[in-house]
Length: 91
Image 1 (tube, helix red, strand yellow):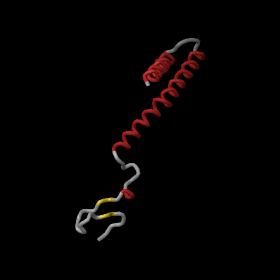
Image 2 (cartoon, one colour):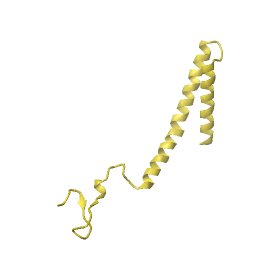
Image 3 (tube, helix red, strand yellow):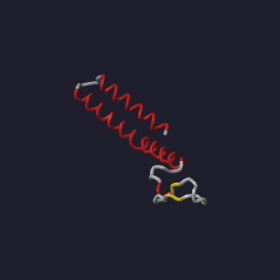
Image 4 (tube, one colour):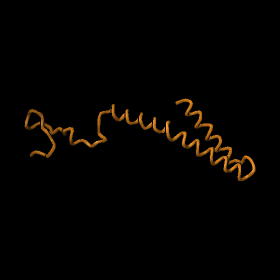
């Protein structure tokens, strides 16, 4: 019995081996998985970290303007901003 997309080795009675076309797109060599992981990490460091820092800084400024000075929330947001700046300096 032949299954579609399955090739048997030289011997007819050998175990079935899936062809490359039958693999799911995410099932690839380990090298590509590692490359994708590094690319995702780079995107997070290059795009999301500065965006979070910018948003935290803006929210801290609005909170301080509304309450006539620093609040606990604005101090925490300033700390987040400082942490994101350090993370960008490391990357």
